[in-house]
Structure formats: C-alpha cells, structure tokens
Image (cartoon, rainbow, N blue to C red; front, top):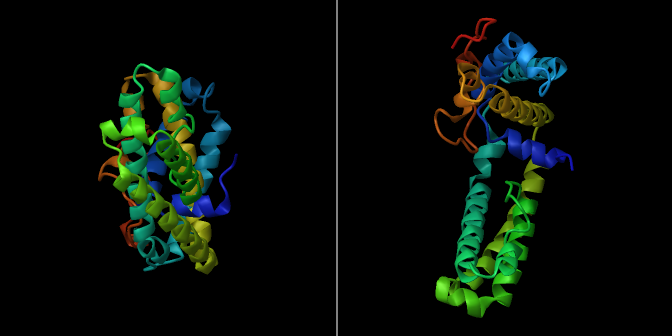
Length: 245
C-alpha cells in the first residue's frame, strides 16, 4: 500500500535536507556512470526521476532560507514514544522466543506482523497485537521477564501513542504548504535512494560502486530524527559527473 501524505511528511521530516541533497547528487552521478550495469534492476528513468526530485528539493529548500523544522522539533515526544513502543514490543518478542523455542507455531504468532515500521498508526497496530498476545500467554512469558508491570506499561504506551497520533495529525494540518511539499519530496527521494542502494548491493556486491551507493552520507552522522534543518547556504555543491566524493 502506498504511503499516505501524512506518512510521507513524517518520513521526510526525519532527514536533513542538506544530506538528502548531497546523497542524492552522489547517488545520481554514480547511477548514471553505472547505468548499463544497473538498468536491469534500477531503470534509467528512475535515475532521472531521482535527479528531478533532488533538483526540486534544492529549489524548495533555497526558497525557505533560514526556515527551521518546526514540525520536526515539535514532535520529539512523538518520536520518543515510538522508540519506547518499539523497545517494548521487542522485549516481549524476545521473551516469547525464549518461552516458545520448542513450540515454533506459538513463537511465530509474535512475529506475524512483520517489520515494525515507523509511523504511529503502524506501531500502534503492532503494539495492540503484541499486547493481546502477551496478555493471552502471560503465564508462559512471566518466567522470561514479562510481568504485570510490563503489561501495564504496554497499555499505557498504547494510550500515549493514540494521543501522539492525534497530535501528529494536527501538526501536519498546521504545516505551511511549502514545508509540507518539501518533506514529501524528501521522502520520495529517500525511498528511491533506498531502492537504488538495494539494487546496487545485489548487482555490485562488495565493489567500490556499492560503497558510493550505500547511503553513507545519510548514515555518516548516525540516525537523524526530527532535527532542525540547515540553512541553504550550507548545502554542498553537486559532485562531478563521475560521482567522485
């Protein structure tokens, strides 16, 4: 299912615009230089789509000189609650893995929902499923570290996430149109960058081309969530056509 506008805004707000532009310029240059090898799993049209997105992000960002990421900085508590919920879910799953090591069908019940994701609605839905399972199998999980206090914490987090989702919904509605458009374009660029990186890993394995396409610029300062945007003057110039870095 495609991302909703709200999910795209949330995703785009997590990344420094400067780093998205810098990574995009490097990745586009490398994709063009290795177009022949990549085209089977990442068509040239997708490279040009990514290039157009990066150019649009640069233009939108330059038009908001000095603007700060009010949506992102205002939603630090939301991100904190998402992190807490994911930690709680993983704690329960770890206990279930130990409790049901010799009963794989029961163990798999705790893994059926797949990846946790990052949006509040998805995390909330997963938390509801895991909480229900933990309550149902409380007696088996208790010896492995999931007691009454842990179940109560899960219920509390569920309520807090519901409130956070409502707050995020309002925050998205309150965003200036230009800021919302910038976040959406950043999210779309990031999703294409991930697809390009994935294709490169498969095609090049451990060759130098892969190193240039592994989103190293986005990762180099660790995970960045809801941090203020840099000013356009800080944006690095586009790299040469061959992707030297």
